[in-house]
Length: 435
Image (tube, rainbow, N blue to C red; front, side, top):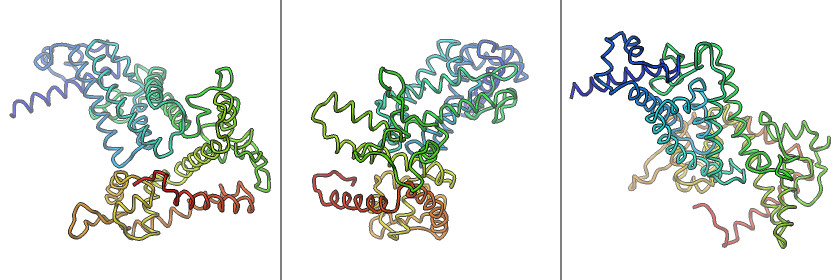
């Protein structure tokens, strides 16, 4: 056993040295002589552990990508949907100086590694996109499979297009999958590469924001196949701020749009107008009023949730889902996990995962039920209650900004109608509800 441990350790050291050389000079420039020199060993030493140069490059590539996957798994513990997608994209775009496609093109072995890893990523990305769509974080009309391919193409593209720093690629995966400054193995980027990495992250962030901001930006087109003429919003502004900048709503807080429930011709929900019109043309007999109700409620809710999460909850160090669970326990008191999931409108699995994360942060207390250790009782700790109260102040101020988009009379009317719809839905036994 000791010899096997030493053998694997030595293979890892050789692979790490090779990966640093790939970062500095590219995969085609790596030779056994260079690897030996980097390790300060005899020229033939790496040959005792690998069949040749190609085998070293393949193993180094696999080791680096496995390290990236390990980092993603560690950072996404307790996360789901868009927050988990952002972590994955952040890890990939941190390595813009060493395009994975460039390494894969250096030989059949690395190409097979990238194909294998990409297939694995497809499955994981599809699961995350499905989670995000179920949570209302993604509203793009394109099928999930298309979004997966768009995201993979975008990530590989920004890697390939990122400008390299002096002397070679801007950054590389270190032996643990972290970004490594060429020649040092330390996390970071080399001089001259920061701008490229930053631009890559901004491009990917804009794409992810577009998935939640509405289908007028992702996976659809305007008349004649071109981009939509309305509904497009800058990715670095919240929908509320953008609508204000465009003059949405008058000084009294009353929207001047029509009464058909379609969001107005120049508001950030303008895609609804296009959807209603085209659906009516192509599918005569469509219930326009019902379609407008669902489209507007879903799109507005998605925009509101994204705005609150990005301006309030992510800066506070948690997700919208975590806030919902803490708020539920604060209002209703300690609850059995299944009941807490019902009150939150979340799945039991999601609440269980969140509770584990929040318990690790000493914000939630998990207590096995007497007589049935499979049942867990959740309650707030004192620290959890303090964090919740502090966050709610900021949350409610943002709610007030949204409410101010309507006048007092319209706001009261909307609240009355929403309560009426909610109560009617509660009484309707034909509606499927989360259990």
